[in-house]
Length: 306
View 1 (tube, rainbow, N blue to C red):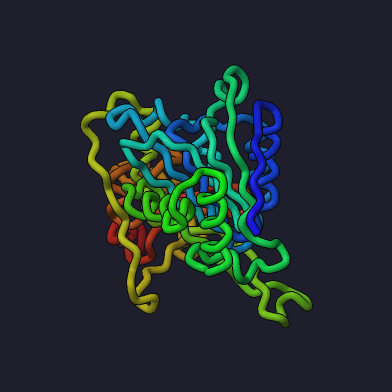
View 2 (cartoon, rainbow, N blue to C red; view 1 turned 120 degrees about the vertical axis):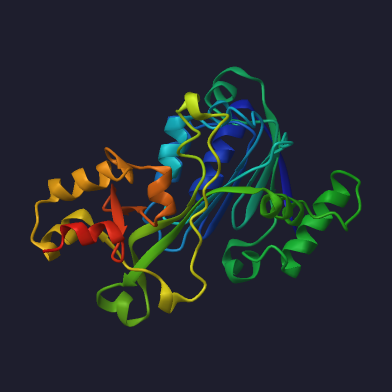
């Protein structure tokens, strides 16, 4: 049976922190405004190194000034996750937070001001038994449907046909994709590896339609979204190399490679330009450090070959 508890002020904030910390495989954060405070960041940091942990974020409002809805430092923080998907829905006003076992429906934005200044309320619903994680992680499972159906009927007096988890999943999936990463994993060592365990080995940025918008007010109304398509056939995926790998393979100075890429307009310092994204350059992360990776078939590299 699903359980519901009403939360207020500090209890609500503590409930949200616990919901994040107790998430195992999936976490959905729905908030029109995102300005993560240190408590929420600390809770999320525990998930950075968890293989295959899926973080899904939906924000809204301020279509032509997205930096007002999701703050630059919060976006930079979220970019560290190896399996994160950030979507945008202009009409979003609801606030909803979901992990593998619980969800919170609330007035609370993921916004530092809301956490510190406003009187906020919400409810937390435990819809699944933690010992049955295999049955509750699928939002369409009967256990979830039965538990949530009872809550919506007994607490709110609405039809059992209304499932808030399915509703918010649908809203998320129909929203505009703005940023997406894909984890890179390798076999773990020791006993864990023998049992098929994996560990993170960086990630690829599949879609990035936020970096240019956030923090660059001059380009807010003129830049167009650029999507880096994900290859359908894994055998055709182009291999990407770091600047140090390329410089070693071509026996050149890494600075010469960087200068060429900047001269060609593919990078700007340690950032990839729109042209670079379109040409297949991606940001990767290794041991907490971001770096630019270049397709091994990039035609500009021919100029460096002797």
